[in-house]
Length: 512
Image (cartoon, rainbow, N blue to C red):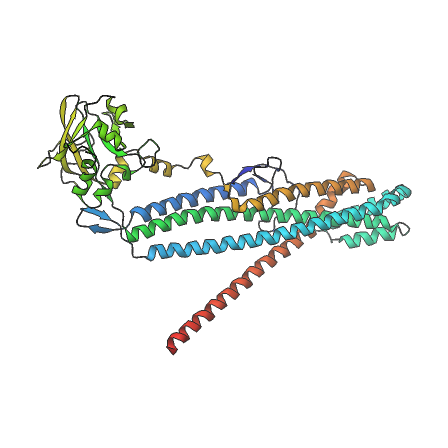
């Protein structure tokens, strides 16, 4: 199932993301389990990701459209221009797909390693919290006044030392200092050290969650790009093996009131004219005028030389009406001409095409390059005989004169369409993120309760939280660097193996 990404702000004090050197604010993932809120990623980073995502989608649409309709070989028999590839285009796209798949696999491997690290840190933090609880129970009550004074002094020193520009102090040093000040109650120092260790581990968990969040988002964007690249690849292969026409042969007529009717078949069932391929005559037009016209004559099921309203309806034919003011609308035969229409189309074309019978935007004349009149035929409507037309139109001309729904949708990605949706493959990682985001919050509450039991103020607890980030950030940075080193090593090993295989192949060729 898909999971939507939404903006939210929850995580303001959980360390610094080593990949961006910024505090992770939050992004909320949401799965079908509405009880699992999610966090991370700053609003600026999210906006940048979404803008990049939209730009990449628009670029991929443009590339796919170009692959479908932008190459050139001429089919002499039909008089239409078609795109013929050499195979290079599809091979290039195939290589890009392979690179995307490899990057996706790398991201998934990183996510799994980060999840293992988060589980390990969470387990260790829980153990430290339990250790602190055992150590502090009796000791704090017996030496409450002494404990407070020693902790106030030493914790403030720890906080100050770990502020920017400070000399730094580890939790082990803090533990040693407290023990030195309270030699008879070492349990207090042990409890503080354990809780400080847990605080550091939770801060590192949050860094890992931020990185995991970014990898999930990046991987989904890769998935989206793979989907578009696959469509582009399939279009390129089709263009190379069976070049699409760049012209189309619409058939229709214009009534005495200036209304233009073009015949089409609603192939995708959306009730509208989606693109030029739905015009009656498009498929046959790839082979020429006669084949295009046969799409009309084939509708004459009783072979009386007339295609009437019933035969048009039975053949799934609709009309695209353009009125004298240029307003356009897709209509069924009944909607356009009434239930008992006398509409009748002769299956015999005139020996010579009659000029001046095209649509009201048919103003470029016979023989034009973008709107050529190929043939005319008789049409009867409301007792009046009209001249129908068969034209050979350039696809760009058609796009400029018809409101095709496909191209309108391509040109404008709505806000809802631009929202990132997460694939079923990524759902386990999103669920993991949900689970450990909640776990992180629970651990923080337990740590604060432990410090509170010892007698620390909220200000002291916040100070420890900030101080432990320094060590946590360094640990997280080293961990992420190890992932990158592992990736580099794997890539070098793979490249070396490929080189060795290539060398062996060359040696075998030489030996043969």
